Image (cartoon, rainbow, N blue to C red):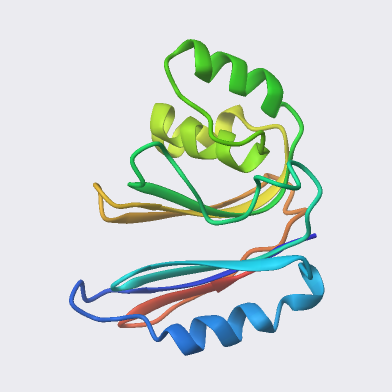
Length: 160
């Protein structure tokens, strides 16, 4: 199953409370008992609970692009990831894993928000783009994988 959670503070000088993010992901342990991972970049914090299914050895999250400027936490499965990886590799992308999650990172690099138009599967994910200083939250069109969020005056909070 997996689970994701995150906090994005509006103020670029704010700092995400790491303990709060860890408690959020711990509450999702039943969805991903095989491990957890965190991306903490000042005012942005993303967390993941993993249920290992694809790329058992190399699929720990978050997963990053080649230079570490784009990171993802992911819940779901991309059915057409093998074809997408071949196409992206032909365009020069280098893969460190055999994970469908990493495929989404490189797809985002290639198509930005339009990456979701290429995905066939069930998913919810959050991508942090360091260069653009932006977060992309997305889920599959049918909402098979849940993604709940709350927007306050000073922050966005989300979880699957």
